[in-house]
Length: 351
Image 1 (cartoon, rainbow, N blue to C red):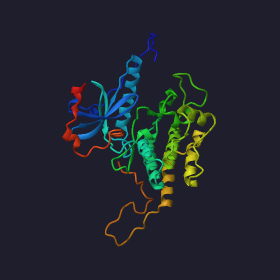
Image 2: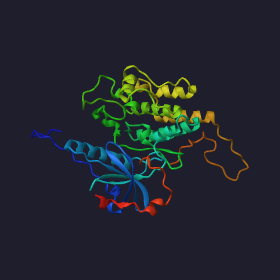
Image 3: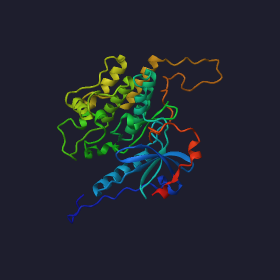
Image 4: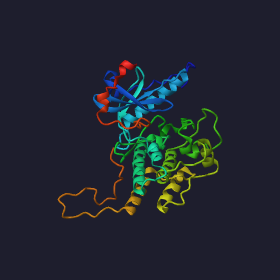
């Protein structure tokens, strides 16, 4: 913002809320369990609790450093603000000596890896829709707080150890919807991205355009199709080819062989017109209704000495109850082996 003397005022950098600051001396780091373009994730311990430790790369150039610090602060701020059983549980963060985000440790692996390992088999319809319910409920929570995720895809959906629950992770690209006019179009992963993010004419690097929370609904539809079919969306195309086909030719994955109720949900969610797409509250109700049709709840037995308060409601998702995919390539480690091998190192010693 320009001041009266012609200079530009620098906005004050947001600070970490002290209640979320972790003590690096109490953080112990184990083996690497995941890696992305901006961060590495390790298994760790904090105050005797098993955790995921995400260490963010600062970058080499000043512009890059500033951008990654802003992304880190945005993710921490949003994680601290929003809590839901289908969002990864935030434990704390620190900015020095390096940027670190600490969350609960989810040992079930990424949804992407889980589906790949199943191929050519597919999920049971009830399980697939149950996972979709977990995702929709997490997104409903984010949207109710005015937050757009912008990077909804199977890599950012992690299973709990019993593989009955899906949790959404990685809010690094998430933004508050009131700020969408300042967003770049270069976000998310093309294969799952909504067409309106890039469809108007290819934007020049850094150029801004406006969009809203319905971009997440489109991405959800692609993920739901993947859950039901267990195939890569836009098979045979590169990410950019898939984006071009979706945006300029209105191509969508084939839903002709799916039950009409599910096909209807998909086609409404990936509608070319964002305003015609349902919101996540509506999606949750549609998925619950479908579950009640394919597997009606058992009638309450009066003679029982106890009954569930939810007994007469549509069945809960089999995946509804609880940062990163653990041991993607390393295999499982028996319980207690970590302590026996003694491979945890004090974080503050490493940095």
